[in-house]
Structures are given as structure tokens and as C-alpha cells.
Image (cartoon, rainbow, N blue to C red; front, side):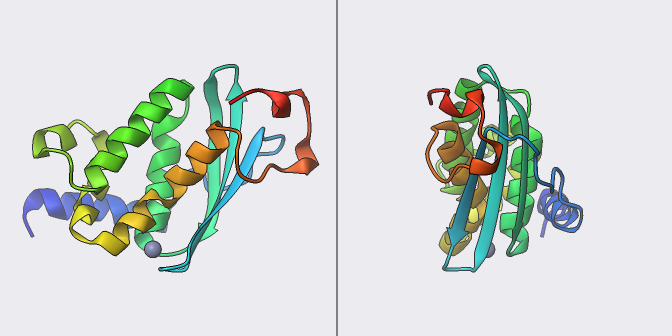
Length: 158
Ligand code: ZN
């Protein structure tokens, strides 16, 4: 393992141990559940929008270190971003974990680069992308919506 791989490994372990934004959001606009039966990962993503921007995003779930750290890194990465920026980041992230990215491009992914190594492990790709798919569904207005927090924002288009 070279130094960079060791650093990436440390980022994943840190986010698995101390996941960021690991909580529910009261009054969230969207709540989407995701599952990866192949590994047993489960994640619920909460999303609060402010117009076109991600005002807050959080998650809770159980699963392997890759799924949990990926969800944690995702929430940190997309908070404050616009829907379009979030979609772009999703696309880049997906390219990275499916091995369609050069090392140089991966180097520009910030903390998310830590998960680039999963491209060598096809089953792990599903773990790393789980929270992102849940977020994308939430942004698109799909998936499960919490009726507990119904309000005007729920009718906002995708
Ligand atoms: Zn997993």
C-alpha cells in the first residue's frame, strides 16, 4: 500500500467511525431509503432544499464501512450546492468508482477521492454508490417522501 492509498484508507475509516451528518432532519423536504441487498447496506437520506440549493442533507443507516463512509463524505460534499452542481458531482463520483477516471481527475475530487479504490471491486461499487442514488432520487422528487413533514416544499418540482 503506498502513502496515498494509506491516506485514502484512513479517510474511509475515519468517516466510518465518526460519520458526518448522521442524523435525521426535522422538516426535511424529502426522505429516501436505499438498500443494497448484495451487501446488506441500508441508508436513509434526508434532504432539505432552499430554492435550488441543498440547504441540508443527512443520513442514517447500517452497513459496511464503504457504504457508511461514502454517505458521510457525500453529505459533506453536497451541502450548499445547487441541484445541477450536485448532479455533476454525482456523475463525476460515479465515473470515479466505476474506473472511468484518470488518477489526475481523481486527485481533484477532494475527500471523495478516498473512495476511488472501489473501482477495482465491482461489488463494492454498489456500496459506494448507494447513498448517492438515494440522494439523486430525493433531488428528482422520487422515492419515498415523509408524510410526517408535509408542507409546501413537498410540491416543489424535481
Ligand atoms: Zn456494503
